[in-house]
Length: 77
Image 1 (cartoon, rainbow, N blue to C red):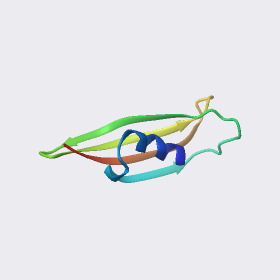
Image 2: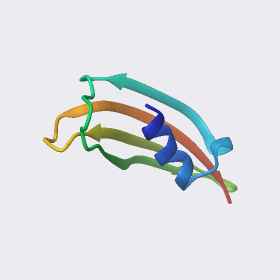
Image 3: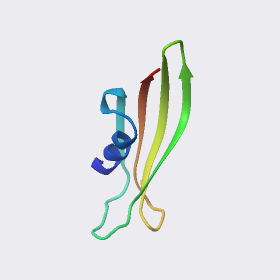
């Protein structure tokens, strides 16, 4: 979960993060190699901000999903 949060906050300031939900799917074993994937599934724009909904997942080297979640972000123009 901290890896997922770090991936998000490395890309955008934490103050832009409105919502962050995580669902644990499988136990992560020692020496697992993890990959994080984020896909923008919704983009809404008004006069002064952009609202994004991002689907996030963490998978191991065997493509087994360890975490999945959803983040809502507001970016001010």
